[in-house]
Amino acid sequence: MLDLLLHRLETERALLETGRTRRLPRAAREIDTAIEQLQNAELARAAEAAAATQVLGLPATASLLTIAGTAPVPWGDIFLDHRAGMRKLVDQIIDLDHGRLTTTTEVGGMDMGTMADADAELTEAVIELELDRLGRSAADNRGAALHPGLLEFLA
Image (tube, rainbow, N blue to C red; front, side, top):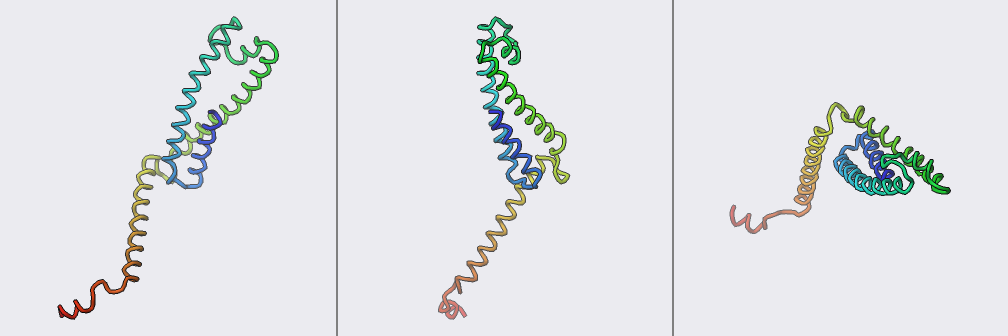
């Protein structure tokens, strides 16, 4: 779950840095979903850790480092490796998320809400232009809309 959240944050950062703001709302939703999944996983982790601390005779609030130091072989080493991997991911997430909060809440002088509004307006304008182009092309290619006989009849 940490790796997924890191990926989502990196994706958001890449979109911001490249100015590809059209996908930012989706990236934000994916980050929110990853955070929600991580919160659910955290509940399960807390329950498992509480069970482990009880078996090891440690306080329920014992850290993974403390659990690793008390756990029998090979579990202590496994927990230490697990802690190192999680710590690395957590540090990267903190760095990315902190950087987002301090340096990327504004891009090109616009905050994220303004960018979403501007992006929606731009998207609508592009759609309108494309529909106009297609309409003109169809009109040019279809020939006369009215039968010449009718035009003659009405002349």
